[in-house]
Each structure stands twice: as structure tokens, then as C-alpha cells.
Image (spheres, rainbow, N blue to C red):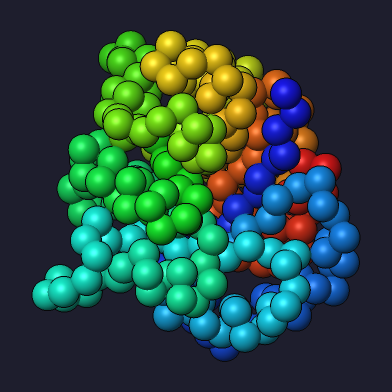
Length: 254
Ligand code: 13P
């Protein structure tokens, strides 16, 4: 089956509302709106989302996502944001389980699983991040770590739900370090992940699920990564903070 590549810009804790308006003006000038063969997403900080929606208006060229969501519906959970709030703003995606949330906020596979279920129940597409640390890779635990992240993070989902999830493979040692996994290493991790999805949820889910690569993706390495058979797009941090380099990565995926 052919999977539509998905390129997403994870802005992390960068780009407030004012700067987002400038980014979008520059991005529009890149004239990528007609490029329907790549799904394009930006994932701003929560407070920037309304400005992004305001500028985009009816334009469906870019989908918008959030960087996290609560596993609760509403109530006394100070600092949390609900799926209903994201839907009210017009978000279509939510990044979950990013390694920075796992590392700095103690998020576990089981906790992220609850958020994935909440997101799906609200009709949001979860972008579920997984990936090993350098220590785990060097200890020969790559497959063990990725396997448990897939199985525990997606536990209880139907094959149809899994088909609609986007998995982002982001080796922790490649994030923000300038060290990208080689295309061959990334492809082998992606093939392994797809194999775990196949043995857990069946061949149809494995064939449909899109697996993005993330970790120091930039215009110079995007094309080689995207050419791999099991790499279905990219989750981009630093290189997606500027409209021209984000656009160049989208062109590489075309
Ligand atoms: P960088 O592209 O800055 O390495 O970040 C990757 C990432 O964490 C995207 O979620």
C-alpha cells in the first residue's frame, strides 16, 4: 500500500504568536499549498495555536497539532489542556510521548497509552514518539526498548485505530545533536517497528501505519531518509523553525 508521507514541525518551546505569523507568511511564499502528496503539519506551543489558526483561516495546506494533551477530560488539573480544548481550536493532531516529556516529566508507556486513547476518542491523530537512548542502543537493547514502547504505548487499541496512528521514531541521541541516524540504521529500526506492529495488530495495520523519522532532520539529509521504504515522513525540530528549511524538507519528501 502507498502511504502518504507526513512531515511535521515540532516547534517545542519556541515561536510565540507574533513570530508564528511571520513564519506562516514566509511559508505561504514557498507555494507548497498545492502539494497534496505530502501531509504537512505544524505543532506549535499551546498559546501559539490560536494565532496559527487565525492566519490559516480556511487554508487546509497545513494541519495543526499540539505538543501534549491531558489524559483527563476536565476538572481540577492545574496546567493541563484537554482534548476538547484542542478540538475547539481546530487541532487535528497531538504529539504524545516525546522523549523530552519522557525525560523531564517522567512519562511512561502506560501513561502515554492513556493519552493516546483520549486523543483517539476525540478524533485527534496521535503522533506517538518512541526511541532509544544512546546507552540503551550501546547495551544492545534497541529492539527491546522499541518493542515495549510499541506494545505498551498502543496497548488496547484496535488494528483500525493503530492504522490511523502516526509513530515517530526518534532516537534520543539524534535529537538536537546534529547526529542523524544513517539512512540504513533508521530504515532497519523502522522495519523492526513495523514488524512489531504486524505481530501485535496484524499485517493490515502494519501496512497502513505511518512511521516518521525524527532527530536532526534537515534539508541536506531529508531526501535520503525519505527514500527508505519504511520511512513515511519526518518529525522535525530545529530545522522546522524557519519556513524555508521546513519547506525544503517537504520538497525532499515529495
Ligand atoms: P531536532 O530536529 O531538533 O533534532 O528535533 C527532533 C525532535 O525532537 C522532533 O520532535
